[in-house]
Image (cartoon, rainbow over all chains, first blue to last red):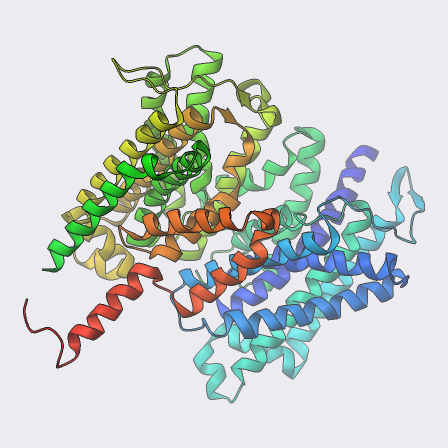
Length: 287
Length: 322
């Protein structure tokens, strides 16, 4: 039974990280209808900026996370202004390819600045807690706690504040939002900034138990896409539920099926679910 | 007049391709050109499903890898003669495409692309992890060169160049027949609007599936050629970055045109060659170029040329003769 709870803990850790990444991706999709392939590069940039702030400038962990969130938010807004804004009237194919261009550029830039090597990020939280037989590294508990706190904050922001509601309104109908005087440019920038913050925080939380390298965003972003397809693209509750489902499925799959093939599990799950239900798990979402 | 021009252009390209080995300074140039041809052949396939039918398949490099590994596994592990294995490369990719197409083509637009992105990852991971079949990360070493056909032998770079060139010309000719037929018009109707195409009585699923299978057949064929040409295979060729490369070729040349993938697929590798010092940092340059192209030249070289000619013809003092 202890082993079972161990897997639940691991699944929640993964799920928390996936939730944050998928949340940013789904918000951007909801507002701009762009599958932002560059989101994985934002995630990678977030980890590298934190890493740099901590090792080269000696900033403490949490301050580095804030600094990295601010940097990546700025990066995301720049991408929106320079790349996606000029393409808002183009065919659906073109913003997708432009996003790939941004992704390739950011990865090459990270490699040019920090090199292609794997880096290890130190965290001040290296202890291990024993919870009734389940050993839990503090960093994992921290990820779970911080990720879910952030998800709740984002949810409150979207539902309880006027600024947040403008994002939801834009996602529901563009024309309707414009009619009631919502500034589409402002909302687009705000959404990209928010997605950048979420990606940077997720990366900084997860990096200490993983590694930092230029291609680190690939698998995470692809899994985030799986999550938002399962949850319905543009749906916030869908992203959270999907993130947890994939996180737990991977953790249990790695333990009970095969550790060797654990990265395939998410994709196989997607293929199986979409073969049986082309409308996804949450058919109410716009498609 | 226009038709004649196009024909003349193609014949000139054909002649250029035929005399290239005599103009090339060394074998290295021949190798670069042959590799470029192989990727052009694969890009022709991607262009059929993306440029003509409007479905952006991000697993295209994965299908190319399937064709390549078909040849690699059969020749190295089962001692199947090269040409028999090679003939199977396209059909194996197309068969896999049939099953993946049935599932993935029920999804539209972005959903299809993201789904195929995942399919590409599955193909890559399977190739990397299934060591007993694919040799995993070690890769397949010692694939035999294409065996001689009668008096034709393929042991020199020049002979291999002509072999690859032959398949490219055949591939282009078949693609020309496809896109200028009713079938090609059907694909374009689907690209221009699912609903309108369906209301014209076009069976969406059947035609999309056909386009998809034809497209991955090209990828598989190109993969088979790659296996015989490079004679070493690693899981890397299934990587999505190769699909990105082909996307760039298609976009630079002109998406949804026959000549586009050829122009893009030949110019971009040669630019990369001259920028050797960039090596792995080439995307510092190509990433922004891709973005600028998409924003300012969305129809590529060929598309922009056609638009320019149309504008010129529309001017009152333009050529009056037909």
